[in-house]
Length: 206
Image (cartoon, rainbow, N blue to C red; front, side, top):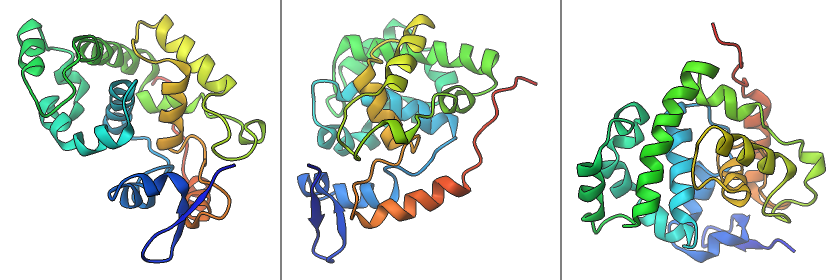
């Protein structure tokens, strides 16, 4: 059963906000709000891959350092990284120094450039995989869905790495492809309204 956390301000939030002091602000201002900016989408899927086996608190604490290290996740720039950049990043104690994950970001940047060429934008591609919330059950009751499985398979088919179904589902939650704020959370209605107003990006290539 998903829990509610009442912070010092008395505001009811998703229970996971109790996990760290910086979680409430991230929860209130970012998590679940729909995003169609390609750079932000790329950043988030990269950070989700870095989180694999770790906690989100670890990644969120290091997020600004990740941004500095990876040119603000401008995938056009990251796609040009070479072995010297990998070695540079492996020496950066302010990020997660995992060779496989670092190399996957560079690989995925190249795949992102290709995706923009074929799909028009990352947003157009990702939002075509928006889940049907009626099939998901209670908020935060699952860690993957049929849509995240399908998206994971499609990304892997296109050469992306570190994009398993659970990683992809976390990405969907955070980027607003679903509203997974628990019932009773003050942000659930706010995000629902934001999703109602959100103009989904088209998938046509001009």
